[in-house]
Image 1 (tube, one colour):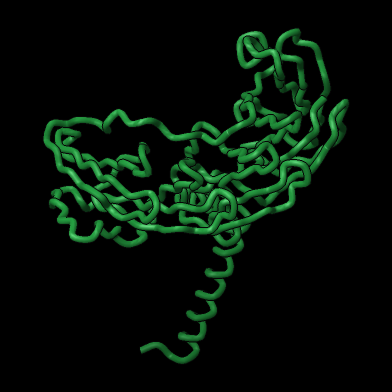
Image 2 (cartoon, rainbow, N blue to C red; image 1 turned 180 degrees about the horizontal axis):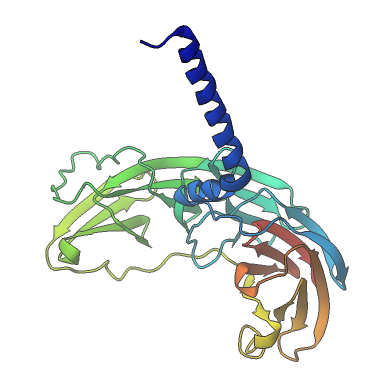
Length: 323
């Protein structure tokens, strides 16, 4: 039997251990734990600290956003969607709350036009005036069209969810889950969307036909012939500007600086050079303060001579008027 003094001593020791462990994690382990949690939730980990602008030459700084973080989402080969060359839409995440949003901002001012919460996104498409967001978060089984009997498929334990949003307002139109869908892809035709699932290493396959305006299942087929998705027309990317992948100074002749007579972007230390893509003439520069730039961590979209630059490693957006 422990005495009251012994119990108090044990409580004090336990409190000291808890405080010590907390301090140790804050000093040494918090960053790794935070990045691990972010990665698990689909948020791109911040690799380097945020950068600032030091100087610019022949370019005009417009705006930047430090807390608009692009998650790990495959969105038609680009992180950005340009609706009318004045509105930029992109997926973002709030690190502090682990919430995902779809953001629409004015390209010139950076002011938010609309913002809507979305489930943890894994893919984004545009079709017939809608953003189509695919997520692993379950949204409840989609209903079938009235009086439609759907066949049972043995591999319905797998699933993805789909949400659609109005392209001009960001308003959510519908959101449902589709049991059996385990292939993160979709095709579109005549106001319908076709989703897919597979089982037995692809030997059997599920095809789900969805009505775009309601999310209701129009038809569902279980096949055993291993056929892939039918050859329907692919999605519209919705990117009206030109997407660029910068090259390093050493690789400018072979990476990103050939075959395009508009712009070429080259990194050198903390400097981003802006070149004429055809003649390779220097048009301007942007000097960043902080960690040197890495060409593989930069995405650029040019809209009417406005360059929107996403620095993947520091998770920042910058916009400049280009020469």
